[in-house]
Image 1: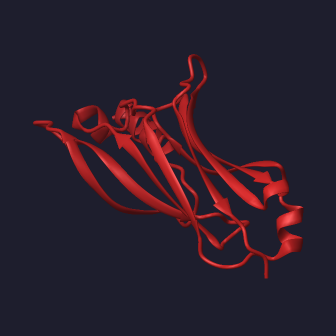
Image 2 (image 1 turned 30 degrees about the horizontal axis):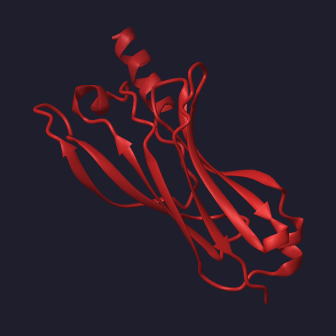
Length: 154
């Protein structure tokens, strides 16, 4: 019984930690698994908390099967992102944004791997650049994707 409690605790700790307003839109299966969910690509959306006029859409791989069901699988580093403007941005707020800031993060394995989205400010071109990548304590992945959002001011 003790091991069951420890396992349940570790599984809860490894749950997906995303931005508070992340919403999974849907998924498509990529590989059949006899037990547990199939491997799949999930599509999620979130708004940048500091720039709510920007909505981002991200797709990422999710491992299914028994390992995926109990939270010990390692997801692939493959991801894609696209962000769109939903309105004009306040110039003073844009100027106060840091040059680089993490805006989204989720766990990709039980302990050491995460997928992240980082926002970069390009003040010269009035744009925000969103980069998605995966990192790991050891042997991170160079796989990445970017999207650029042109900013219009109020």
